Image (cartoon, rainbow, N blue to C red):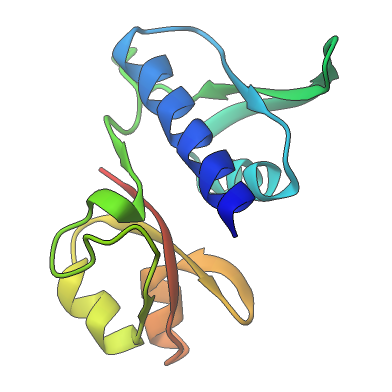
Length: 138
């Protein structure tokens, strides 16, 4: 679980830095989890380009944050579970029921890891299943 948390923190930092510094392309160390999250974001219209390439010490994933018609990124911040509000401020991600997901995150785009794979909190609520919060996109 520690590798996933470190990998996730690196992805969140890379996404936020890409947006903050208006970089055209961001990159993060390859992991299956990072790749799945980026594919999930691409399918939802947040990422416009993903490519895996080899570097000297391992593989990297390059990605491009999608921009709206005014040239601004389609989202402005990504949060990790360790900095979330509502009693979830712990180092370890807590499982949330679908009811708690709906009450805590009614207006944000939340990615949840469930026993049926990655999905949004709204999709999980529609299926009446809970999960672990992976990312919150604002």
